[in-house]
Image (cartoon, rainbow, N blue to C red):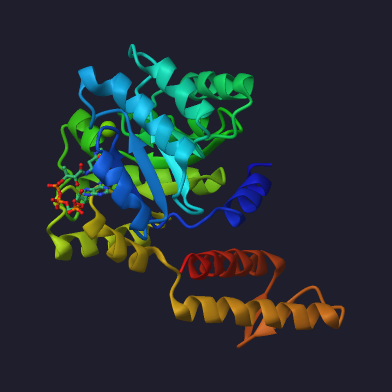
Length: 296
Ligand code: COA
Ligand code: MG
């Protein structure tokens, strides 16, 4: 059943190559984001907002979501943890304002996902849930967290907090993080969730950022969480399917359709067998490429 879900869910996901955080207090960034070519915008109420500014930021974000003007991009709100005095109000406000997704920080147990999912169900909200994977328990228990509630749609790696908790080093080339990165991608794919690589804080280091994106794409991530507009175009390039991969996918689809038209269940292309499974993957890749092209 997990496999069925995985196929259906991942095929329909929009592009998430570049997912830009903006502090909930930064009106200039919220304005500027309208012109940026990032796939996803994440309005932050958590670590980038000081305690005394939380309530004001919550209202400002709700007003932004209401006003719109961000095109067809996914609009996400990162709320404070349910254990804080802001968590419940953040969740309700983001849900009522029509966020596409609500990003839960420091997820440690499946109960946190279930509780948030139940609140969204009760409110009749459209929001999906995204979960930050940034605690040792969260990464370890990722499989039970992944299956906790049908609204859960994505894992986002949070490497700063995670490395700190592990007493490990998150510096490039992230050797000490590889087990966790691979584990989170593996679990996400097994459960049909999207999956985002962590941020690269040194936003003026273009070379280091490009290397981190290449590594994230190689590991299988859908895209990267970003902190600065300067990082958008490199992430968009690194996480887009290559022209060669799209051309190959189209050939696979065409070969399979030709075989089906003749009544065969499998096709042969360049001496390789093509089955329905390959075609489903090829169609998902072409759908992603078309969605990126439509974004302009
Ligand atoms: N989203 C949208 N626009 C942003 C932005 C962001 N995350 N970060 C910077 N900008 C804009 C600035 O407003 C500025 O625009 P302008 O020149 O048209 O006024 C331009 O990009 C250049 O910004 P710059 O001066 O280089 O950056 P800064 O020193 O003002 O800010 C940071 C640097 C890191 C504080 C800022 O990028 C930031 O707040 N990033 C997000 C942090 C965050 O949300 N963290 C939580 C998740 S880890
Ligand atoms: Mg964090």
